[in-house]
Length: 273
Image 1 (cartoon, rainbow, N blue to C red):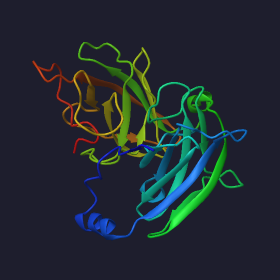
Image 2 (tube, rainbow, N blue to C red; image 1 turned 180 degrees about the horizontal axis):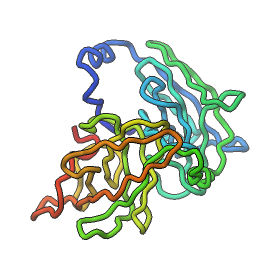
Image 3 (spheres, rainbow, N blue to C red; image 1 turned 45 degrees about the vertical axis):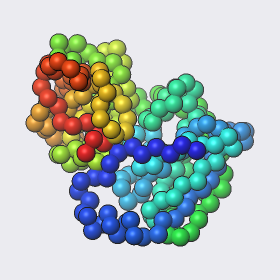
Image 4 (tube, helix red, strand yellow; image 1 turned 180 degrees about the vertical axis):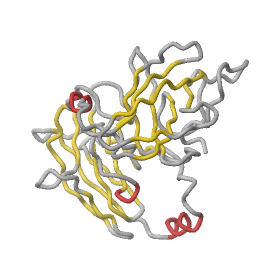
């Protein structure tokens, strides 16, 4: 099974905490994800969300960036070594190409929930194995859930290039910290031909926005989209709970290793720290 590392550790984490985590014995989380009817989600993806790092998984309200990702085997099973803590589990079987991000129309999707339908975390203890058994009932995701604006909390706007034209295929990431280091909290769906984005978040607060066209870390490739709200001087956006806040246009550039870039220099993209 292929395990993906998405983003570097946040710069706000102290060295002492990082060293303590490294010295603490890891635990193991294992389980199996199934489609409705019992068929395994073979080749699908399991997402893990550390409960201590952010709000629980709620794809109908927002898409939180996962902390751990792994490809499921032919039986729909996964096994991961993790830092001890509580984790929410989600899984997706894509209809088309694989991508780390919100489920889309036609994708089969499931989340770990209790009998009351509330998000259910699983506890991982150092030196122990937690087997969550089989999580079933993955069903086609309904994109209409993410389009409901009544009571939604988020930011909307348009991604444009240096000529003022809309940019399709861009992703908008929300960070709680102004240096936008480490892993973002939330991510939008990809922009369409009109360049419009709707970035949903769990609650009101101050958020800093960064734009790329790929998930995960590493240096940008030729032609990659790069930008941030506020251009070279990132600005926060104040968001109220239950309100979709206009974020205005975010101007981006295309990264190039040769020649001059046009437009303002954005901050470093996610995961390049």
